[in-house]
Image (cartoon, rainbow, N blue to C red; front, side, top):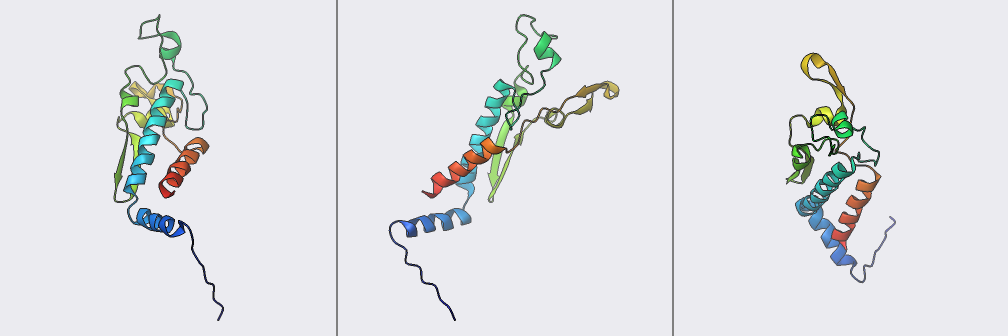
Length: 147
C-alpha cells in the first residue's frame, strides 16, 4: 500500500483550522458577502447598471421628466428610491439570500408586460446578480477571512 506523509509548517495548521471553522460556521463570512452585494447593488442604481456593467435602457420618465420635475429628469428606477432602499440580505443556517423587498422588483428585473390590460412592455433591467466583478469580490472576501 502506498502512503503519503504531509508535514505542515508555519501557519498552515491555523489556516486549516480557519477553513474547518468557516465550513462549519459560514454565517459571518456570508453576512459580509451579503453586505457587499447590498452596497454594490445600491451603487449600481446610481449608475443605472446591470451586474455585468451594461447600462439599463433609460426609462421615459428619466429621459423626459414625464411625471417629474422636467428640469430634473432623474435616474431610471430611482424616482422614489423605494426599490433601491429595499435592497437587503439575510443569512441563516449557512445560506445567504440577497434581493429586493418590493413586490414589483421582478417586473423591472426581468421585464415584461404590465399595467392595465398589460398595455405597457417594460424592458428587462437586471438588478440582482453575480457576474465577474461580484464573483471576484466574493472570492477576495473569502480569501481575507482565511488569511
